[in-house]
Image (cartoon, rainbow, N blue to C red):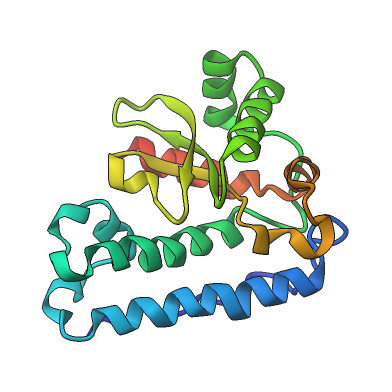
Length: 207
């Protein structure tokens, strides 16, 4: 039976301070992420034959195959589940700095510099109207691209592989930053886990 589990947070709630405060982290993880997980599991009931043996990434990569009566629900709740799973992994108390290795070379070829790429991702995140995400993705042609998505929509559903993401739902930053989304986005670069982004990049190249 399909049963999606809330993955353990890879650090303590206060590990990303002063950039992300402990109270926001705890509420974000234990309430919002947990709710997406619970809601996704509720949607699965009665459709186990479709979900069994599939990862959430595989499911979101072929949304037209999701049973029609729960499709939008899975896009919303499954997207929230998958996006948050990834979000925690690309943040780290030992993060910050710049990409390295193959990714750094590709970033320079595509954007000119890491600073230019960061600026473009920040703009995508800040300019997202309402709730959503800013992304760095790898296209089907293995090109780097910056984009944003509304709500919990995933780049996986349009054939793109997520490498890095910034959560700009208000619950991700409001307790500390209130309406200052741009300040939050600027701060989060101090905790980006480039080791994980590089790992995702090299894995995506092999597909």
